[in-house]
Length: 307
Image (cartoon, rainbow, N blue to C red):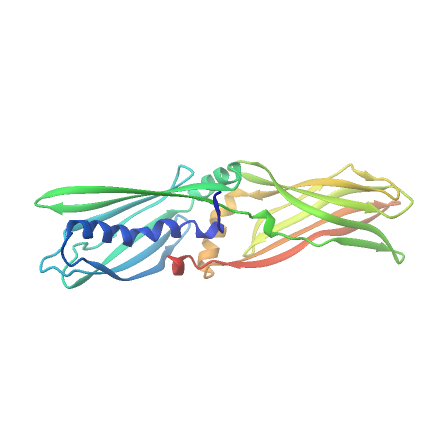
């Protein structure tokens, strides 16, 4: 069974292999001798803009030899469900001089690829196969040697199941006239422009008259960015003293996903999510509204610390 992880752990699976790969290859070249070791690894966010999000890695490597190790570059590509998400290289001098030296890597995640990955992830049942392709480039006696290394992982997310709305009710004249309960969310259609979230809820009519459900209004924000909003009409009528299930469709504007990601990183890897939804009811010619969702929560990631 695939491992379930948070959407924001995706990148650490690729990045954490880089220093290990460097050490393994160098150790292979020096079998039987004292071996180079990674003394420390530091990760930090670099430049964050509308085009890309940079991850900067500093890897301090101990070199026990009296000569330099001729590593000339480290090339990295990150794929998720076949979508190329980002690439990177070593920065500056990559020769590892004795007794220790520091390698710097710059990985640029392309923000506009987030939408393509998101579509594939939802269509695949919230499952992604992540593949990391790394090439270690050595310069030996004037020749370049490329050693390819490939790793893959499968991960799942459970975005909608983390939302737990409470039941709501509407009282008229001291009587609990309407009850809304058992609200559930599930994915609908998804493409590059939008992601559908289908909302279903049981509406109970405690009055001796029929109650038409007229509309649902909703708003979804993340770090203050309006990811989706709208008003959806309905022709459902709840019979007297009965209950029925009503369904509405909310939509996330997928073109806003890169904007949200930039805000998340700039906000110290923290996001505040707010979902507000209400249904409009007609009770004997008078319009009432009942909150379907009023839900807000924060989530944080520590991607760089975990690498």
